[in-house]
Length: 526
Image 1: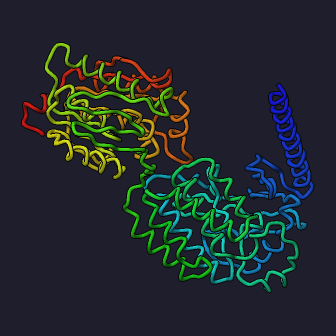
Image 2: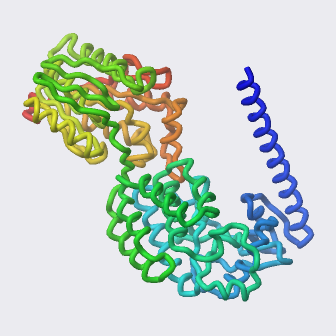
């Protein structure tokens, strides 16, 4: 009882604090509008508001301008903004703001586009960052506030050039302390702002890669933490960032970020060269393999992890695991997949080729081959640890007809009679393939499926699907929804049958082509 009251009181306090903060922000925005009008600006719309100030698109006589009304916090760094302006850096990536009454920053409005992130564009944005950082370092400064999952602090011209849009003052770090003090700066509200430190810059760039390049939400809080922490704290944050990026095509770039001196031109030149080498490397976010234990017996193997099962002779028994009551329960998914095999085999022999995309610990490849007698069963997974474990099981148990390869959905071209895709399609939409199109995905499934597709569709109401189909700055060619999936499934396959599911938001379907391709076994394709 007391715990419930304490929890309710804490929640009430948090909500009250949020309400007060919201009210203060509204009052600040209203004051900003009044002050801009007094200075001859006609606000058209608010572009954003944060701790540095509120930004508006305004008319100024016959011109359109971007105007930022500084908060008290933003004004603390005004000498630094003035120092940036005084250096008159002629670089197309930057505007030259004007300071009015020591409380307003203004620069010309330009019709810019939001950056669209895919497998290649973000690396090109990183290249442009290296380019303008090299110029800044030659003038004794570095830019660190690249922006995170809510929005990057740059946009694109219609020619595709990156333009920095945030000039709140503390976005610049300086190499020469005496120059900063000579410019009139005396306060220091955040320990790691103002003076350039390569470890701090590295962390902010890594967080930019994680939140924008990989679309990982929630990591942006570390940016604020880095502004106040010690050198030891920065080291730990750096290690956290490296772990998040490990296993993706940004891994080598991240290693270079932490190795070079980002307070030097040579460091940014080296980083740019590293990014150039990685431009053609596809972005795949590889999560840690969920493998608890693999134990072999005289006649089988016991597997515990994301998939938990015991394979003995020609029988597979699902095992209880820590996910027993949620989406990853092995028994419930295996039951639905077995039902699909039973439906396929009801009036005909099972076809001869089977593919599991995202095969994990190999359960369904072994189920197809050992239990249902499909002679050629294959699994592909982008995680090398899963592939290695599965191939060891095949070798130790002498399982002819089963094989596993490292690969991705987008790379796979071979056609199979039966294709299985569980817990996959919502990742393909943005996270691993990046097309932002269910039609592109279903069309590809149709091309690699000879006759039957067993597929789980996490709906738009599923929490994981919402996370991975609404990644920042990814394109959306069509909507991600159950209705759209069923429409496309009918178009590309013909027969659409719901056969079960692991939760109300995770239905599983059996799709069959109206005019099935000639079975691959009859065409001699293996």
